[in-house]
Length: 359
Image (cartoon, rainbow, N blue to C red):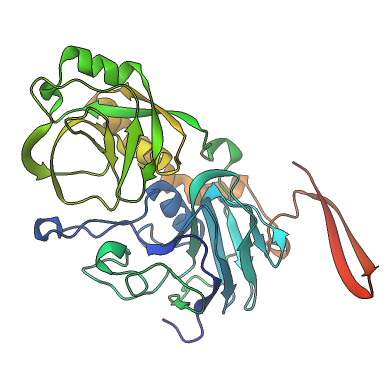
């Protein structure tokens, strides 16, 4: 950590974790990958502040934290809309923002999605553990002391080699993900789809499944019609990928997520394609999912297009110019007017700022 570059946690939120893109290379030793649940949102946030996409960010779930910046620099907020505010004023997401030392980031409440991401120029600079800063809470591994953040923590931030940006970046509105309660998730069949009857596969593909309350960073249990096996749901344990759709003997699917175990002994009917995992990660209990089969070749083409998108983010600056003078909150383009009132209520004086915002 560069001296003085830290984020102070005033309120921790529901579950705020340090995450990067995962701890790879150690699954053979039983160490889960972990990492950001929505890797797209995390990577875009890093791109917006000039970081490598693999830098650590803060992942915030449902109820965001309250954080005080101990430095001046650029940040970006992506993923779920948790109604972010800086010093009490709403700020825009999916673009570069500039903060000053002493600024406070807070959140008003969840509007869409489930998990939000905060990237800071220089990256979250907690110690590397097995080449990653990701938090795996079940083993108290990585991140900030292996746990969720709590009030009073001072989260270290790395040196910002880029300095104050000359141009700020913004993702065009039409390219920002929309998180709805009903979604289609694309899958590639296998590797044990031959363990299911033809009727079972049709059941899986032709019905809507609901995310249950048993959904966390390890996996999502779904409720819906039971999927029929040929003989049963048990196999010799093998490796589990992010997005693997397990179907135990009871026939109800379980989608394995970032904190999944390294191996498992249930049949896997399919795997969620990489580009749809972020959409899945923004699902919450009660959301409905329909599965759509695609070929491996289609999945590869979609992944290539996603990679091209990352490389094009810096070029968006020319098309989406933002006045640096307004970049501290970066909502000046949305505010129609601002009025200040001084109110006397029961002997107490309150200064109230009222902003009319175009929506």
